[in-house]
Amino acid sequence: MDALQQYGLTDRISVLFAGAFPDGRIGPGRVVRVDRSRMLVATARGIEPHDARPDVATGDWVALAGADPTHSAIVGVMPRYSVLHRKKAHDPLAEVQVLAVNVDLVGVVVPLDRPISSNRLERTLVAAWDSGAVPLVILTKADLSTRFDEVVAQTVERAGAAEVLTTSADTGDGLDELLSRLVPGVTAVLLGPSGAGKSSLVNALFGRAVQNTGSVRAGDGRGRHTTTSRELIPLPGGAVLMDTPGVRGFALWDATDGLDEVFGDIEELFAGCRFADCRHGPEPGCAVQEALAGGVLEERRWLSYQKMAQELAILHLRQTDARRARGRGSHQQAKESAMAKDHRNRFRQT
Image 1 (cartoon, rainbow, N blue to C red):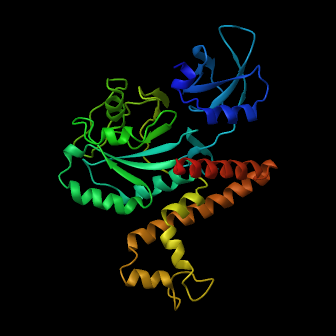
Image 2 (cartoon, rainbow, N blue to C red; image 1 turned 90 degrees about the vertical axis):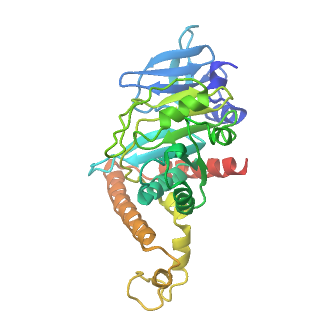
Image 3 (cartoon, rainbow, N blue to C red; image 1 turned 60 degrees about the horizontal axis):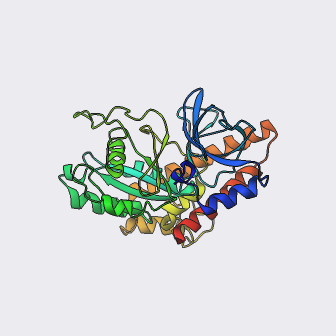
């Protein structure tokens, strides 16, 4: 298996690449890691260093050309079929931060050795569904939980359509089940807070230590950032893992489709309201209020949905104003969204 196959080159990727770059003299490469000024690219000859580019992220497929037999030049970037992103924290200009590109699975890592934030889980799942990948909730540190059954049941309820797996890197529980989802050619990103056990999970899946692990503070359950850059790690079975630095906050970025996936049950209630313009408050005949009163809809979940829907509405207004100021439309954004939906649907069918 050459370096490109190790880093996720499949027949489908080859077809997509040929469609984007029909010139037979141009070959594919995959960005393995990006640091401030340098990045590593997997090529047919092995791993090559290149100067970092602002338009390239870890996981991107790039077009390589050049007469030099030992080093290639990047002449283009293949359109991304999935993009996991969030709004930069405390950014009034609504700028985006790309977390992962061209991934098939988003492993939402949730540690069982501390209280689980349902709102955080839902928020991360909204972004994961919207990315074009398929989310998979991975509960870690199962051996350290004192409320295992209760917490797992609660997580399954919160996860909605996303599958939930429980694992322990120390005992090996659940690793075979997780590996069965990581088939050859699949790229998965692990996303979770510092100290959630992502690096320990990577090491357990790989079979030896390939990532540094750090201690977790007893007071608040937080850990040090043992992963400092996003990096692709080939697994022996043919899948590719992307480990990421710990993510604390998760401000949403243009995640309307993801909101529909996670809160589809709430949005279905809207059709049952007496008035088409129901604000879901004191109006008579509001299906949402009836569901809340009857215990069918949890108030915490309704408040979580309202907060994210309002957040996205404000963000969309800022994005529209920014596009107008730059004189750009939303055609490219719509194109990427269509590609993401197509990729997610194809992957779910396999």
